[in-house]
Amino acid sequence: MIALAFLSFAALVGLALGSPIANATSLVARQVYTGDATYYAPGLGACGETDGPNDFIAAASYILFDSYPGAGPNPNLNPICGRSITANANGNTVSVRITDRCAGCQGEGDLDFSPAAFQQLAPLSVGRIHGMTWSFN
Image 1 (cartoon, rainbow, N blue to C red):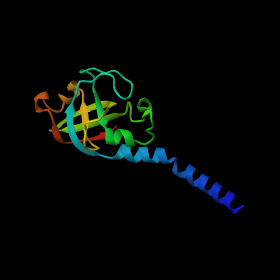
Image 2 (image 1 turned 180 degrees about the vertical axis):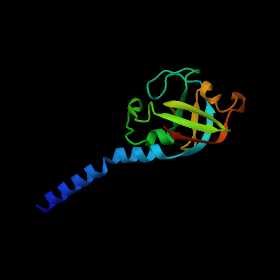
Image 3 (image 1 turned 90 degrees about the vertical axis):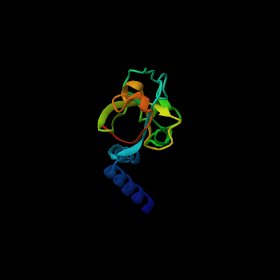
């Protein structure tokens, strides 16, 4: 009887606080990330979408992609896929969607942009931007 009452209480607390995944996603969504910005030649990405150099997309660091709340073994179903973000660097801003996973990104806040998106932040000749900030929209 006591165990049943405790389970009912735990269920009510869970409902009041929301699911752990929803709460974790909310915390991730409010965070401001800092990292390096690079660019790459997009194609078929980890989210199962094919993009090109003129699409406004980015690949999230494997660290963030793999640990994003709700991520599982199928990257196509990762809840980060399709999320919109806004990045800032050098006084410039760009909004993109996450459609890929960056295996070469070393920091959680690193992003690998399509060439068109990167050019909104700096010329391609720069190659890498240190200290870019970004957050989910």
